[in-house]
Image (cartoon, rainbow, N blue to C red; front, side, top):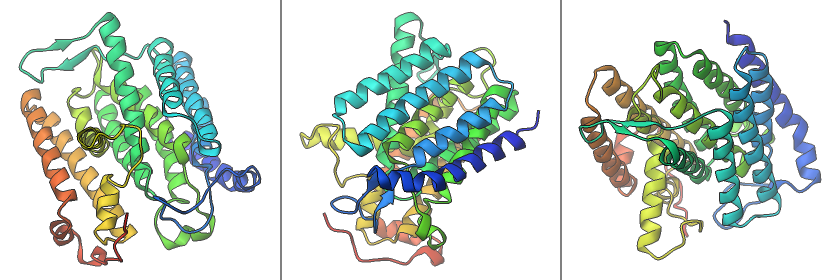
Length: 358
């Protein structure tokens, strides 16, 4: 089964949809304006999420995939995109968004029969989950992934690029294990995300046609990556260890955990936006948008590659988890020491810009 056609169709429709939806977004005031935490220039249409969803629908529709699985995944994505568009246009309370995320996770649990049934052997013995504990943990994982990717969507290209890294890693495991469903869906989603990135990367070529994904796009990426991580790591034919999925989405996980910790330490509600995200720290240190983008993409690739290597080499779950925690400490430390980061960058990307103030 060739995946080139469906992936190309997903790419093409997403790209076409974003161009076609630009005037519609402007007409209905679905645009993002600069100011406050938003550092972009000009009014940018927020149509990336809907464009990616349309591309995914076409791409998956061209593949002989199980209807209950694709139907539940697309329904979950459609729910979050719809709620995200409403939030992008009118604004919703954090609790309303959370309820939508839980509903989307439940669609996967009961519609696609998605469930985390084992955590592997992170402490030397196999941890099994069943019944309510399995369903609850699955919902927790999906909601966490949705919010993790949403936190990354504060800089052009970042959430989309890190999603491509995760999807690429999942595709590698799918090829190795022969999981046609996971491989097909990951490739189709990659086609749509790459199309979106052409209008969102922080480079000069797309300045006149730039689009944002908004909450509709970041939540779509989060739920899609979460489902694929569960699909490839659970069941008798699992292509990867559950612990390895942490490495695949390492940067989003570190971002989420560190954000919760620092906000709790300061007595700030977990849903309140601030300037403390990793990309804010790097930008505030004076790095340019391109340099910041390169830092996170290279770091995400390095962490995912390291996790894949540990899995293929048969390293125990206990060691993999310990190394993941150590890598997390090192990542947070790196974010707060920009001079060290600058030394690690290729010379071409060491350009700095005036620091962004709070």
